[in-house]
Length: 57
Image (cartoon, one colour):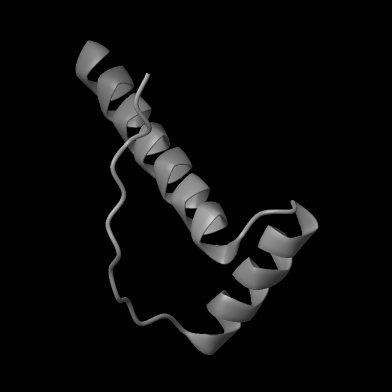
């Protein structure tokens, strides 16, 4: 099984968000990039699940 392709991007974040995310990443023994990827995946899944539930009503 192939690993998903990754792309490098540049984004601008608030300094406090960077600090908090970096701390959480370190606590979970992950890189900043890995942790941001996990956060975004979870957010997208939650939004998709919410949409599915709303569509089912």
